[in-house]
Length: 258
Ligand code: PXP
Image (cartoon, rainbow, N blue to C red; front, top):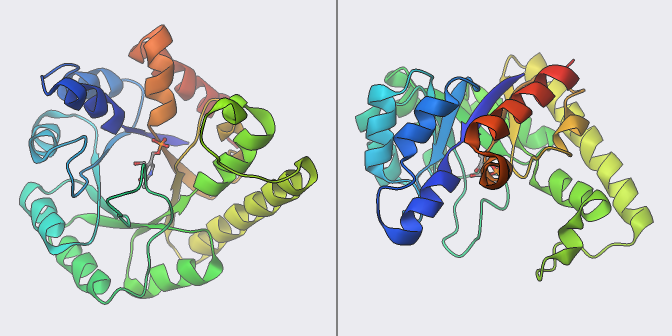
């Protein structure tokens, strides 16, 4: 299983003080020993990573760079200028805390954006909800990769098995039985869509909300070749340091992957 380390949360800390600490590039150099890809999301409001980060990562980082961004014209121009190895198109709402759902694939601009990126040899991935219709549509649109949104799976898992109930936010309000059933259904959906994607010759990644517990549950899906994980690794790094946090995730992926 390939690991894409989503570096945004390093930039979140830096932006809290608008100084160059922690240094995103330094974090990327260190991470490159434990992962196969660095992922960054340049959001329209630039709340964490910036265009400079992309420029430096593409220039100096020894593992491939995966830029997540919206299909907005300005963002596509930035991608075409810096030419990361891959662009993952994601939906974006300014008011959201994080990317809350998959892309709306009926957006007319998507096909044009995909072609423009591929013409510059940039691989294109679409961050989608795990539905068969969206997998098929991604193929029609000419994507190289799909990334299945695991956010709902993660929320269900965490509501059942972690301390998420201790947050002041309402995440999911379901009784235990409904949670168990919904979790099973969500895993089945992820598996079905991963297989469907692979059958259509799409490369299949997954990500969002994955951590040191729930990740094990999706590693049985052998069609998923890559996971993009950020927040949980940086959260763990606060206690054990970034190298150890990455090593623990790497070890988990090696141990439980099919
Ligand atoms: N993949 C995509 C497409 C994302 O938008 C994000 C969050 O930016 C991630 C993976 C990583 O999610 P998390 O930080 O919850 O691990």
